[in-house]
Length: 164
Image 1 (tube, rainbow, N blue to C red):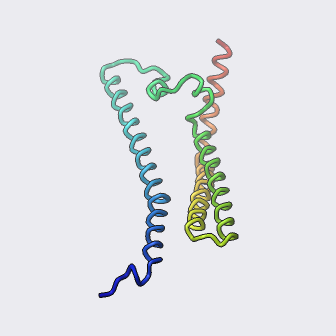
Image 2: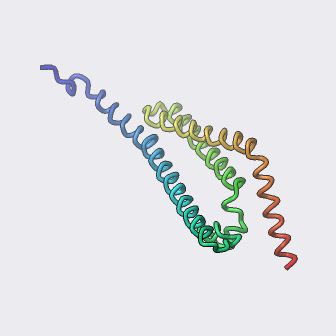
């Protein structure tokens, strides 16, 4: 009878490394993103349901309803943490960081003739980082009008507070 393990022991080691890479670099991030998206959608649906019930009951809805429901502090609102521009800048920052780590890891593993695990991990980080940078560029161009409107609203709020 033919025994695969004794014939080619590195075959199973390679598959084990590949499974670890796929789990850490693909399945884990996808599940984290899915959890975040599900949580945000659930939160938005909950807020919309509360707002619908308030409208049906004839209750006036305060201007800062969404901020208070999200639990944002006054300081976080001033810093523009939830603005489109801030989210895009976070995407750009993570893209640059991931690309840098990916480049360093790939170049180092190629230069030292290290195993393929580090090279593959570096390339995956590089691709994800480039994806975040491309997302920033495309989204900032397509959402330019909304970003401008958001900035005008924030400026109006600041001027209104100064007048009071």
